[in-house]
Image 1 (tube, rainbow, N blue to C red):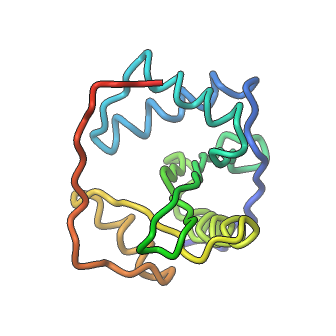
Image 2 (cartoon, one colour):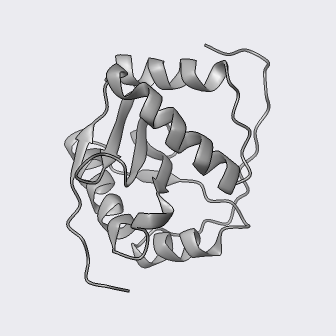
Length: 155
């Protein structure tokens, strides 16, 4: 790995929606996720429009090195409010420069600013490189499986 590139970030706005969606399509393709051409842009727009939901940060000097979606949630087990690092994408050309680790530090800092005690994330089983990054950053692999039920409703 080369020397770490300092992380530059800013909160995305609705003006950034086209660039964010382009990166999301690349991320979803790489991570084997379904990109819904209607629901996904609507969900991103909702996040960009409502700071109470969280924040989407663009990474890199020009915002093209990747993005991070940090959302807010509530869990009795987690002691109330918690933050979810919902998505972290580093563009292929920006990888290997320490941006992922710096983005995790930024996510932790933002979660503390929000006053939450727990930062959560999910990682796919087919992505050991990402999982190793998260474990190095201090995240703990719990003894549970995350299950989901699609209720068929979208924003």
